[in-house]
Image (cartoon, rainbow, N blue to C red; front, top):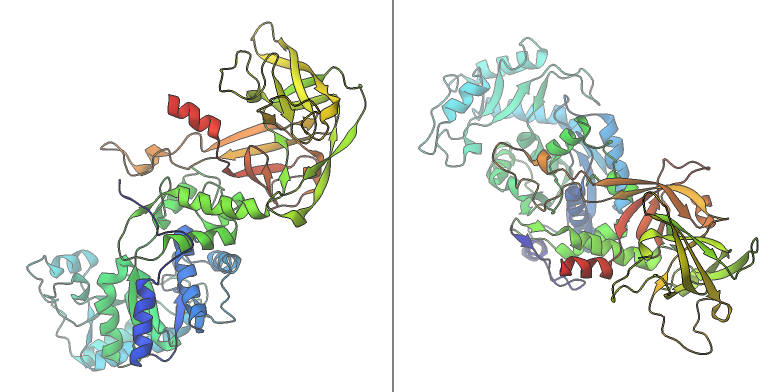
Length: 566
């Protein structure tokens, strides 16, 4: 599989879109820059949309121009105000500000209709009675097509039929308005494309005013023209539509923006197809659009991603004309870099193993100082309670540890983070399962704060812990990639991408133990659980039982080393 590596991070060169804009400004074709983000309100935005938002908004800001948010709402059967509201929230969260410049293609339905009548009167459009299947047949093949039998209707007849279409006299699908261009054009999109179709459907903004609706290709360029967009920046699949975009605005005789195409975002271990995301939701492979495994903006936001990390990611992968697949590690690295700077540290134990300190008084508690964020000196410190019974991670102890395992084992000594040196003197096993149920040991009182003792000795391992008497019980949701292969479409014949869904994309830990300060956090708060990864408090939390989502793991050198050996 071809996985693109982005350009050198933090030193992006001027991309080809900027070069085109510079040339247009230098030539005088445009005197300013105005861009737009034009989503269809028929679903939730995903990471691919984030790339488009960052590009369009970033260009407008760079050139001191304007940025529009326009909803291309030309298909009433799939659109809803739910999606409009969600899109607004996502675009705003990502950091783009359209400053009141919010528009809708439906704002222009009257003007689009007037222009359609103009094309009919000039002999550039006609009403066609062919069905979709018949139109496909008439378009022909690479050798050419043949004209519709209705292509030579007079402008007067066409105008009458089109007005009767608008009046609702005909049933859905019985007639269309088509542009009269070239039935033999090598570009199939210019073989008399459909401009309007009959659709008796309620629109989320215009209600039941219309029963004919413009096609996207007809509405898009004209909407750009009305708004004064200078550079209409689209993904590569619209490159073949560009001649039609230009034909419409030239045939009508209105202001012409420049359409520029760039490669859409493709990521490993996920899908960025709205159709497939809808399928995942409708078939309940995920819990909803904001499931933290989903590549939707509301999904990654709930998981704990930051808008800064997404903007940095989009900057690093750059803009190109060549389709490829970006390794998801680029996205995760941008997130780690951002969270490392801003996320407070905390201690949490996901798979608790009881530790009893034999030389620490039973019932005694002391408060130790812990650093909130070593990357941010202004973050200060916090107090964490310490007692004679602790919890540590179960995999921080091995009964027979190998030489390169620097955690706990019988007779071994480790640092307890921010606390003391601790040496294991014994352990207890369940007589039936053989599972270790308790560790016993002693601390060195001279090492308070985890410092080296007066007589130095080698202690390579440092492990985290929580006080059993003060621990907060929590649910922790460990999220992993939604698919278990880099390319979800890499499947045997007869299977679909769904067969590559990762059954371990969500693991729920029900008995995690957290340091007490995490009980009073708010939804969306993100922390680095030391040695475990970055975690975000989920909205499902209750005052009695917080819920945390794993946003992204830390780099685990031990796990990587074992994987390499295997």
